[in-house]
Amino acid sequence: MDTFIQQLINGLVLGSMYALVALGYTMVYGIINLINFAHGEVLMVGALVSWTVVTALGDTGWPGWVLLSISLVAAVLVCMALNVAIEKLAYRPLRNAPRLAPLITAMGMSLLLQTLAMILWKPDYKPYPILLPDEPYEFMGATINLVQILILGVTALTLAGLMALIHGTSLGRAMRATAENPRVAQLMGVRPDRVISATFMIGAALAALAGVMWAANYGSVQHTMGFLPGLKAFTAAVFGGIGNLGGAVVGGVLLGVIEALGAGYIGELTGDVLGSNYQDIFAFTVLILVLTLRPQGLLGERVADRA
Image (cartoon, rainbow, N blue to C red; front, side):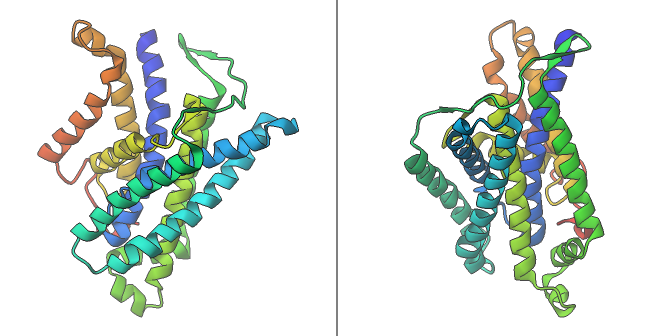
């Protein structure tokens, strides 16, 4: 039972970060039907920018939470500017092109961002400083630290704020209208280009937040660190029902829990033939099963709510 509770906590923490990134995928898909495969690299840039700021300010003697907050703001601003530039330069000229063209462009942008990050920050792994107290707290026989508690709390508040934005503001209404029918929305006074840019900015902010959380939780950053979380988050978005905000959250959390429980018990299930380093098997097994049995995802896609 102790192992189960511990892996459940680990899964909720991991799934929370997946959910933040998956929301970026599903928002962009809901607006312009594009899978932005460069989204994981936005997470990577956010983590590396945060590391750069924390390292630069490390000698000031400021408290860790202040350094973390400043680095998070810097990461969000840089990632928002980056994602808007990606949308304008790489995706907007191909908006009416066949779907294969923007898909290939997104993959190329992913490789380009990885290469640029490798040039700017070098390819070696960099330790992310411990900024918050790391003493573990006991919970039902398991342990949880302050960073993990912060990840769960901030993620819950962020997701609640995003839902309020989508369903309770004029920007949210414009996003839902653009997702429903861009031409009709434009006739009603909505500017689709601005809405799309705002969507990319919000997705980038969520990815940057997830990147800083990822770095603080796992303690290292590197130029390829965004690929696997981005791929898992895409799996989570498909799992929950891509184009559906609630589905992205449910898919992310469930995928994180499944992956963590799988990592904890895969040794027992296979007679110690496979270890926890094979935990990725579970994520992609889930993707195959969902695509086979329920291609629209667990919650399907409610067109009026995609944003």
